Length: 257
Length: 156
Image 1 (cartoon, rainbow over the protein chains, first blue to last red):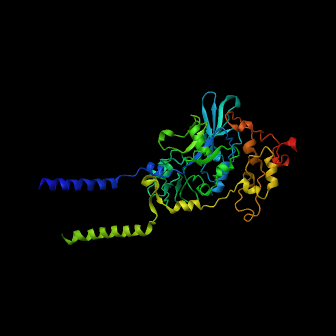
Image 2 (cartoon, one colour; image 1 turned 120 degrees about the horizontal axis):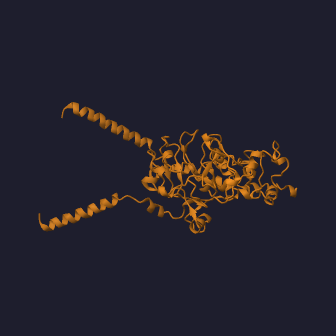
């Protein structure tokens, strides 16, 4: 082989290999997300405002046809009572479907717990719902592609495709997923995708009399939720899991898990 | 090669072809990696539209005030102004066509969601007038004395 031929064929081979390598390069989801900068749903929970009435839970169950009496819910409210000794007592009777009407805290097997007012240092309510994470652990574990994230950030379940294996229910660090007792598939908060996509509010946010819940577009700098996330001291749940939750809390306390 | 080697090989190849054909027919055309890539967006695209088409039950208080202007004005002047109509009157669905009438929840259980007195010093609950439901006129409905659209007894 002449030197000229060798160089020629080497150049052809290298450029050819470079083309096929670039075709094989994995596409970064972040890049794809940046390609759609107009809309990314986010949620703001103001825990200072929540009074534990549970109207959000009732509205969510009605709106999304979750059986009222089944012990599953897409959103719930937790009550935290921190005593002067530093003990943290938490309860959420029926997910606060009927609100909090009793001073006693439901401690499941150990019965009802009475804490005298004089022993209470702090007491507050924390609404919970799906965090619609940027890197959702539940989506990654689905073996059949039944749960996924839309380009505007909502994590949804394809009811026709779900085989009910329950991996996603175990995979979610926040415990927001459950097995739907009637549909027999995994179920979760959709951010009321049918409402927000048609210009509405989520059922829980519209039912809240105290503006403790708000949905908004994180990509719109004039959106009240985006403004609060940018300008105020917000926290997210279980940041250490790396799921990048998109439900932001005002007044989040370290006791909240 | 001998026939006893080829035969099982044909069976295996046949099975693979059958499985691939079944997959071709069973998996919809719009199934695949969508906007969020393979890791987060591997799904059937038309399911997004199916979720968007899910029927909404709750309308909005502004929907109610379109006809019941007098009611929304009266409640709007009271301390209950911030409570959405549908929290007590139930989801509107397609009212007035379907259902023609809404059921009003006048139960004590509804009122004490907010007005049962709890000691919650780090929340807004303490700013709401509260009662002990077991002591405060137990057994009768709150609405027997209090008008939900103007609950203060002094104003009545």
